[in-house]
Image (cartoon, rainbow, N blue to C red; front, side):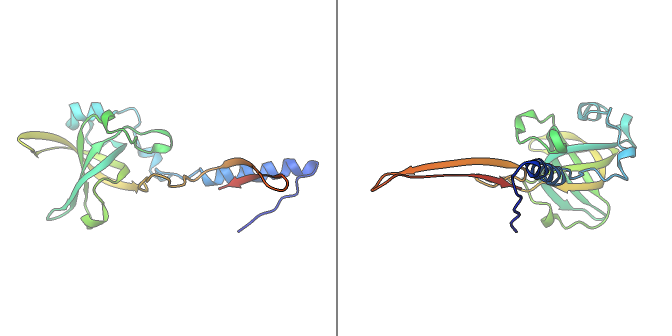
Length: 190
């Protein structure tokens, strides 16, 4: 779909106003559902929960991570996550070196493990339910556990993939030949 906005006098301002409105609409996606926001305790860090999961039992947190594996249990689905700090827009960082550990999220209803792809970055809203000890390679590892309330899976980023948002480009060129050829343009993308 193509939009054309006259760029004379007062119309220049209205063109930029329309672009600003469209930009804000494109970038205002809620990750934490509005109904859950009052339940979330943003004063508790992942380090706090890692150190003493039982102390924070019942607290609702927003955490980010990368899916390491998902498996179906008898009465739930368990997702093992590498914790990743949240950045702007509550998106987990891409830098795995910033991780402070691992945690488990339990989906109490059926969630096909094949739908939670290994390596996917997610933001979860979950209620701290305690801890669970499992083997991690040759050691016993104590995972904080959370009951899943909301799951947001981030799109996989690949080289050259266009990111949503506002962009302006100015292009120009010159040709050599029987005469000179020049060109230019201004582009807006959403």
